[in-house]
Image (tube, rainbow, N blue to C red; front, side, top):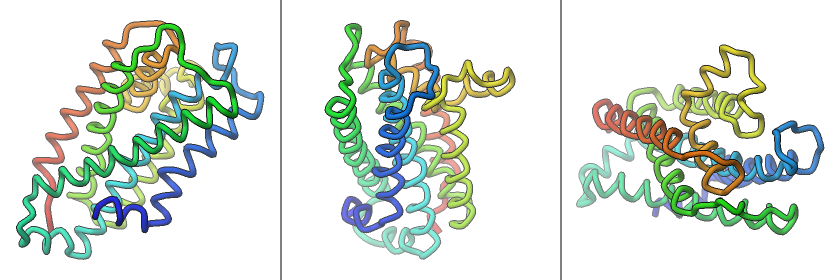
Length: 234
């Protein structure tokens, strides 16, 4: 049912599917990026995958849950045989299912249209762990907003965060291109940690994934705890 509801929301499909693909095709097709690599597509694919996780876990999940709470849907579900754990589990599984489609779509377009391939030092284990921790972090943030703010406020804040993380998350622009204070801020954001972990996992850059994965894990645990303590069902 969660997947069916997601597929019926045209605005959700725009954010989760269309925008990441458009970002990939647009920035891979124009020669304006200075990313320190011979092929901008190697920098873009991990960043766009991170953007897809943010769009699905934070924006889509947060806004949809906020309006379900606003319209009393969550309150009604609370009186059904479905447990709260079952509801959250269904939402997370739906998010992971959508993200699986996003990964396949982005990777397929990058490989077919732009000749993208995995780097020689790629590690699919790092990629999977990064995607799971990123989902936990951004889903926690989305549910924290949905459970405490009004639906309209969640809509505004989620979209604002999406734009902020797009600019400061190392997604289409390396964070070392940012002014000093903004670069320092970007380095502690989960979006940059996810982008960096995915670049290491996909072999686009060398380095240890321990630091970005550790930062992602800290954000994930922290956001999940905040969501669990503050979420209100009505």
